[in-house]
Image (tube, rainbow, N blue to C red; front, side, top):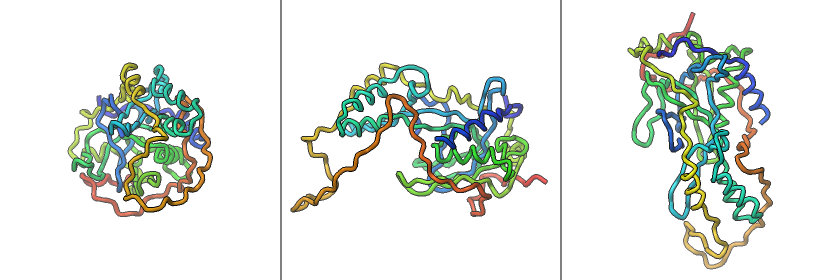
Length: 308
């Protein structure tokens, strides 16, 4: 089945925008994934696969655990069944146990066990930075794009910004290509999502110009992109979670000094509830959407023409 003929749930997207105003890919992934790497990524978000009657949206909210075991130097990333309302989660239960201990070190570990909120979409990618393996996105292939709350907020706001003329960005015939610019590192990472300067375009024209047979493209069922790990696997990971002992001096990256430096008192930290509570979405200020004026890398195919 091609990408034509899909519907739109206007109310569902409007509700998501209101919710946002209030408030590494995982094991078991069943799709070819894409994320915004440092630099500029140009994408076209595709419409929903489900019908309006089925309550479909062009995105899906997911919750993921991302745990780094400092003792084994291993990393575990997986969907949280509790956050997805699919069943119990031994990792969340471990986090609740540690939090209830009221010990500062245990609470710090518990905070790291909370699932992170992410969002996935079906997209076409015109171009983007190469990954660590030296591979760049390929136009004419459907990817599942994964983003955090910061970029998702801007995508939804654009889709609902009728006053600025950028609503219904997923329309096949008159949708909008998006420019996602990622800057900074770690907690300072920022995402800026803007409409491409070409304005509204027909994605079928772009596919035809690129020599892509749209009838062979298949959208992913966003409900089936991730398969949660088994209860046994979650229990195995939870059993390996340790709280650092106060008697053990952690390794340091610097040479020892002759005299200890004064240590500032630790400010109390406020913690939310457990388990499986949705991760708190930051309330960072996001610039109002504007048409990007920056010069972006030439797409792998000719840029879609402006509709007249």
